[in-house]
Image (cartoon, rainbow, N blue to C red):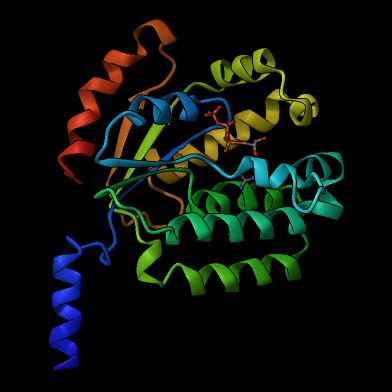
Length: 230
Ligand code: DCP
């Protein structure tokens, strides 16, 4: 009786308790994820979840993003642990809308940024082990599964130019080589699929295009998201 009552509750909530069709928007720093997300902001079927960067800049008044860039050896574990927590919260956030569009995910945090820190010897092996054990645990949960990944593919030169142009204070020390390496890691993960297994299907957009014409590129791929086609 209790189970049938629960089933009725789920049905009458319009499937509210089920996970929405979940799309992660991925791509290098400066690839235009924010602009892509804004395009879907006005659609009432889509819950747009921007990256929790404001929280990373203000964790009880500590700017963890800045600390990480200033002294990665000392702070990258602290920063990436907090990224993992805030990302998990985004994955678990309940939405009214049937489609959830997330800026980044637990997966790019681990497969791209932690990967890069590890390759550069900036995150110690024991710290990496702790991140990984958390990662392996939380990515088994139903809430953290993805149905689709949108890869905003840029050349590293274009991404770097955009970073210089927007002039975010924490990123003033970012070098081109860092963006080039992050590009290579994104490519290996989402384009060539040689790094980590990627369970969700990936659609690839040309994100080098200028803002004046990129809307057309968005429109080409919009049906995948709005019609929930993986
Ligand atoms: N970052 C990081 N580790 C993570 C996630 C992000 O070090 N796990 C850093 C890289 C950037 C900043 O946080 O300095 C924000 O990066 P994103 O690429 O996630 O966001 P952008 O605002 O650069 O995206 P876009 O320019 O595509 O809109």
